[in-house]
Amino acid sequence: MLTNMRESIKNSKVIKFVLLIFICAPFAFFGINSYFSGGANAFAIKVNDEEISVRAFDEEVNAQRNRLRQAFGGTIPQGFASEDMLKQQAIETLVVGQVMNDVIDEQNIRVSDVALAKAITETPVFQVDGKFDKARYEAQLRSAGFTVESFEQQFRRDVAMQDFRGSVAASNFVLDSEATRVNVLNSQVRNATVVRLSLEDELAETEVTVEEISAYFEENKARYMHPERVKIAYLELDSATLQDILEPSEDELRTYFDENKSNYVVAEERSASHILISIDGDTDEAAALAKAQELKQQLDEGGDFAALAQANSDDPGSASNGGSLGFFAKGAMVPEFEEAVFSMAAGDISEPVKSDFGYHIIRLDEIKPETGKSFDEVRDEIAALLKQQRADEAFYERSETLANLSFENPDSLVPAAEEMGLEIQESDWIDANTSEGIGADARILQAALNEDVRVEGNNSPVIELAPTHIVVLRTLDYNEPREKTLEEVSEQIADLLKNQKAREALIARADELRGNFVSGPLADDLPQGATLIEAKDYKRGETDPDPAIAATLFSLPRPATEEALSSGVASSGNGDQLVIWLNEVKEGEAEADDASLLSAQQAGAVEYNALVRSLRSKARVEINDAILSPAE
Image (cartoon, rainbow, N blue to C red; front, top):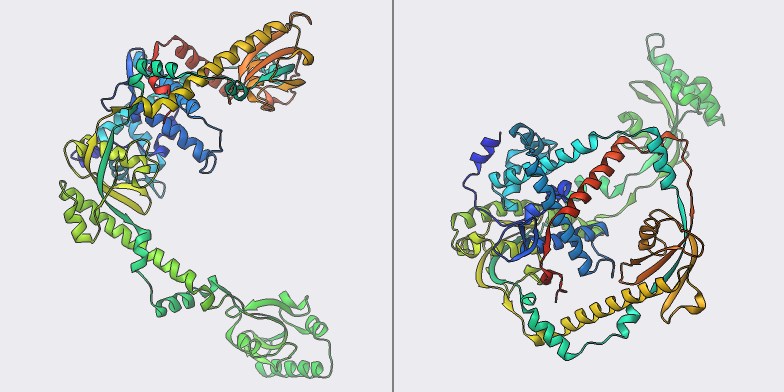
């Protein structure tokens, strides 16, 4: 299967796109850097002498940001994720990924062709209706910038990574005593007193000089570079723009309304009761009619319909309910019965009505008139729906044409533009910081910087920005990274130096405060700007009032004496320093319920994470400090 897939697209053009995020998701923590590596940029991180490029780092920062954006429904809350935090997360992800790649190589862990084929065919993004689809597989790889060979190489490594993790986790077992001890520790409570020192207050008191800014710039010019940038020409196909030329006629709108009336109108319903005198082998038609006429006469003379139905009706389903059939719309009853019911007024009692079942005496009990919207009320809604449907159909036809024409004429967009009636548009400069226009989508820049597009001068493959929105582009102009001037970055450097000074000063103040109050803080003796958080009990993982408190608190040793409490310092997410004094440890209790005990699978995961941390701590890591400077 793998050979066939290679052969089928062995002549595909190479695209420098990252693999779609839902393909990468299962391996987002380990091995993700392999999907973003490439380019000839200076290294951002060096792990055990293996370099990770600046471009790979930038891509991972964007991936971290996109994951947060998705987690919060599209918009990251203000202040939730600073640029520094995103960069630190990206560094750690890339470092751990490279460390684990080294382990895979050292352990000589390999994935067979059969196992790889199974993993690929079971990947949902390559499936249609739950089954592997070769055409979809090829299309996804082309749009993601992979040849079959390059994708299989990377995917094979990630499958190996998952196998390694699974083998470590599966080899674990847990004794009952261990599980009980874990539960005791998990339910432990610790009482602590905390003092918060505000970074914001420290920043207000911190100043930097012009000389400091200038000196820093001279020493770190290489950190301050304008990113590489491009200008592009492109053709854009969007189903939204096709809607304007696909206006349906009034007859088409009316026909759609009539054919789909049930979507807009609730038809009239009627509630009726009946007395059925059936015709069968034991009762001839004349006798049945005579009985029905006799009952009708009794009703005309004031007889009780429900009582007569219970006593005489041959319909067991309704007789016990006084003959009531409830509400029904047209089409629910036999034609003769329905015709009678929908020609009556509420309260009327019919003459005997013959059907295949026998003779019915019908009383119309209630009428629910038709409800819903008229054609005029839903006309615009139907028009929008039809335009969207037609635009989508036209889009899929035209997208295939655009892909073919741009591929068959790789050195120009003109043939495709002329044949399809599209306008060749041109962008302004686009770089990694572009936030508006066509260049705001990172996939545009990635495609424009691709060697096949930028250097060889070919059209890009089709770039799917949305399910019904695609672009094909050419690179018109290119600038390599270039130095910024002091004037451009002086404010940025000032903020950096000010932040560094304030953080260093705040850490020193926190250490001093911790040393001054060995047995716990005294509210009256706290320095200006310090805020006391009164003593309270904390559970593991508690986030109130700050998640950094519990994280540090549960790493402290038990207090030696009341006069010498255990203490520590933690950094809050916003840069504040938290000085923590552990007052008391309250032991937890083992849960009686087996479901609360540590499972072997959980223990395996813990052991695997411990292994990763151990390997990470032993790795030789060199970080290019330039990547940590705040983005302009």
